[in-house]
Length: 369
Image (cartoon, rainbow, N blue to C red; front, top):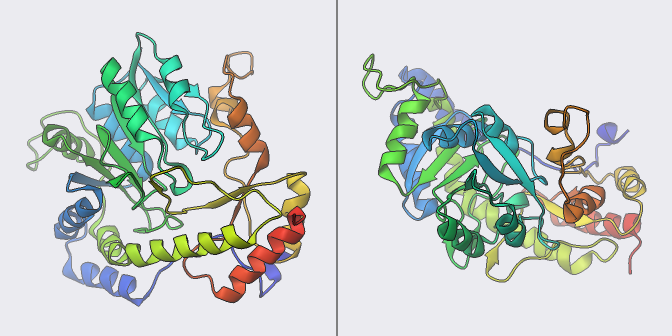
């Protein structure tokens, strides 16, 4: 079995070093462990990654999306345009506030939402667009923002996989009304668990801070109905350490991806749009033939791999119609991607020997051309 193979290359290796451990212990010894100085410092430092925007730390990437939609006042009767080719959290956040996700297709090349499909999906009930910077590739934000401005719509960027990605020099999370990041352990940087919201609107930032903390800015002076979605100082301290290493890790991911691009011929390597800075949360290829057989061969060769995502959101049980069928969505590129994609290891701790094995295994499994 792959898990028993000492030479098996895992799809991801979450990094928890001595610096992260020391930071966590330091906070635990301080006694200031929730929504304290570490959180405030993390928010300020992360702001540098998103062109100086206000940042609000929360307990997960899903909470970041949900709280943003809540802060914008969206709810029953509202529609939010979402790509179906994403993790379920993108649509779940919409449903959690009582609004309805409207699923649209992706572009054929980079797996991100198709702006033309977005424009065609707008109705009088549409209040927001949620582009997902999938796998670390920025969505076509210039075109999406133009559509949003024409129709006076909010733009909530799902940047959970895209820390440090950019388009034409502008960082993801700095385009829309707000950007939402995740710090889950397998992300490009993590805080064990956590999330961050970036926004250029100071009023929205204040509302988000209230919502994450039971509606309070001052203790027991509740201003609105809020939730408990705070980040701990332990998580923030770990996140601060990881943030200092994000640039180096990102460049290593990009170098790893460049090597794989140049050596893999048996599978279709991921294209990058003009002006896009891809940060390769995942290195996602397309199988040329039978994906199951390709995956099985990769595993036999000791190459970790995974499918993100085998079932588009519109086909998941919570989003089926009452008769158990998908809604009236025509999403051919989404369906094709879900049937073809395979993600290979690209994480920054890969050695050159492992990279060579990944490329050789991909060519053997896919049939080099």
